[in-house]
Length: 215
Ligand code: ADP
Ligand code: MG
Image: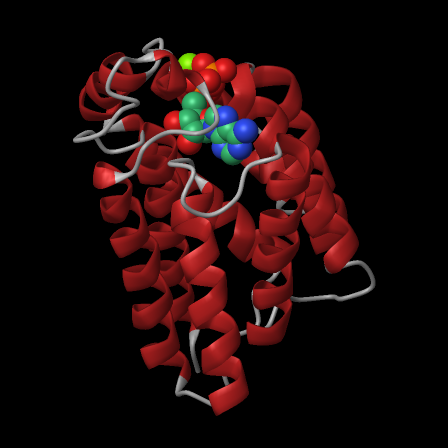
């Protein structure tokens, strides 16, 4: 019962995430021009373009090696703060899933949780600082709660997705404490954080994909 993502499935998720990010360039860039230096989308899109190109070879690895390779590509291609943060996140995910042949609900929860911990450690930010953490942290929290409560997996997918989206939405009224938005006079108040929005895109695509894989 439930879902079991293979490396090939995760590579398919990467292709879909690439598509989602790729088609939202104008909007995300607009957000980053309001609070940052405007390069967040182009950085991330470059990384996902490369991942998309490599998706066939990613699909043939173990899931742990796949995470590690994604991390290395993100670290080297994305640049900016998000390159380092996503790179660290995927390297931590590789460790979290080491020895597993597939990714089930508990495995996916431990991957997202390891990513969150790595991003927090690397960037020295926490929830409420108006960053990508504000989308990922609530998603991880809800994921853990659903697993503890034995929530039906389809419902779990919807809840985790909503937590990520609401989390990104909540950055609108936050004052930035880390990252470039801190340089703005208004500390970004009134604007969504671009990194939180792109994090919510990835979680949204992931949870929609996982939902299709539930047997
Ligand atoms: P840079 O800030 O170096 O230009 P990007 O444009 O690639 O980096 O990414 C900006 C996004 O990165 C922000 O919107 C924010 O979500 C995230 N971010 C920046 N600094 C941090 C940090 N210390 N911890 C977590 N996320 C961060
Ligand atoms: Mg930037």
